[in-house]
Image (cartoon, rainbow, N blue to C red; front, side):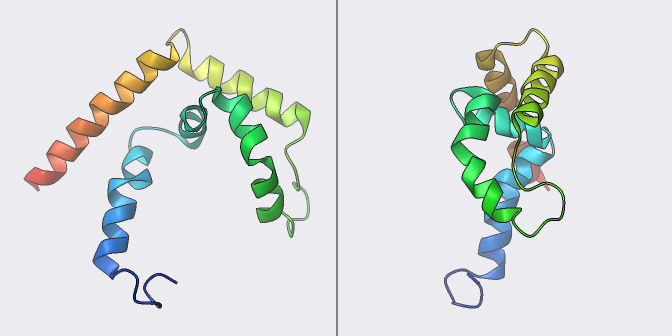
Length: 108
């Protein structure tokens, strides 16, 4: 749509994706990204974005909403994955690695 409307070029769009969320996917999984997307972590993210997911999933046969049980699994799973790292430690790790990746990209 952005390309079609002349808002952005192919290069602009690729740069936005590559330097934004795409760069993070090289380091982190979707649950880790969601965990940091809301100040309250995964539980807050689910509450903040529940209606958007409902809308996106409305035409799916099985999953149409994030049930309390599924939310609990996601919250427990991300806590297990992150282990003893605090939110601040995880953010610092992510930022350090993103800067390293950005530095590497400039050398290519």
